[in-house]
Structure formats: structure tokens, C-alpha cells
Image 1 (cartoon, rainbow, N blue to C red):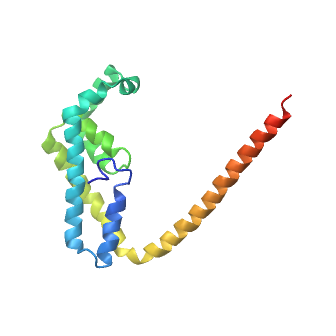
Image 2 (cartoon, helix red, strand yellow; image 1 turned 90 degrees about the horizontal axis):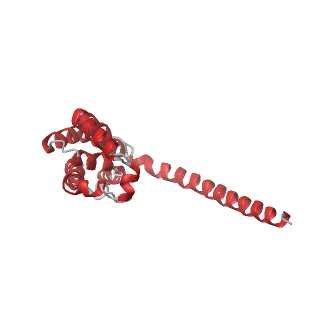
Image 3 (cartoon, helix red, strand yellow; image 1 turned 45 degrees about the vertical axis):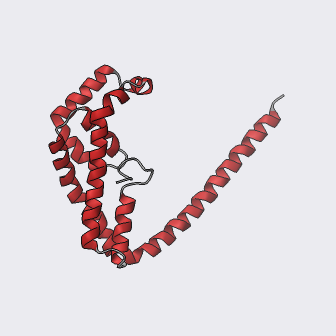
Length: 178
């Protein structure tokens, strides 16, 4: 639920972790999966509710108005009224778009029952797949993490080398000025 509300962790991380922990016997999968689904849907409902109750206030912030003009806002609301179910279904599967789409569904006054039904249908498709893959391939996680750490070390080394080259180039250019 917290990931769905904007905690800077992708929603998929706790889902995959629950699948791995279920495989290890820490959780019972038949309890963990419904709890995850309920938490995800609760987080989405809170985002919808916030959009419905405070969305108009958010839209009136000066920073938001620079990006979202009143005309553009009306076009967006019209799109939600016409294609709200499709937008919510698609947003459920696109990390980074979810929170904004669910807030906007509330702002556009998509009926709550419709929002929740479409979101639940999309969640019932995607979440068990992620959970199931993590559960089935939990034995492979250690090897994957080892590979990820190896790649992280190379990327860190590359970043340090790039910063060093940039600083050296800047120092060289400053020394060449008259």
C-alpha cells in the first residue's frame, strides 16, 4: 500500500519479496497474495480519493498551471470521461504513471465503482504473475543478485571515471585561459 501511495519504492518490489518469502516458507502464499492485492487496491483507492477531494486544489498550484493549462485540463478530464476505464487499466501496468493516473481519475470524477472494478481486474492479472514468477524462480534470486552487484560495481567504476575525466578536462580548460 505504501509503495502505491508514493513511497520511493516500486510497487513490484514488495510483491516480488512476498513471492520469494512465500517460497522460503516465511509466508503462506495463499495468505500473502490476497493481502498484497488488498494492500495494492487500498493504496490505489486512497490516491483516487485524494484526487477526488483535493485534486482541484492541486491543479490550482502555480507550478502545476505552468505545465497544465485550463484548456489542457479540460481535454484531460474529457479523455477520462470517455476512456477512463482504458486509462486506469493501462496505468496499473505502467510504473511511474500509476499514481498520476489514479489521482487524475479522482479529479475527473470517474465513478468509484468503475475505477475500483477496472483497477481490481488489472491487478488480478498483473500481481499474481509477478508474485508467481518470484515464487517459482526464488532459487535463482541469489545468482541474479550476484550479477546485479557485479554490474553495479562496473557502473560505479564507469561513473567515477567519467567524473574524473570531466574534472580533468575542466581543469585543463581553465589552465589554458589567458
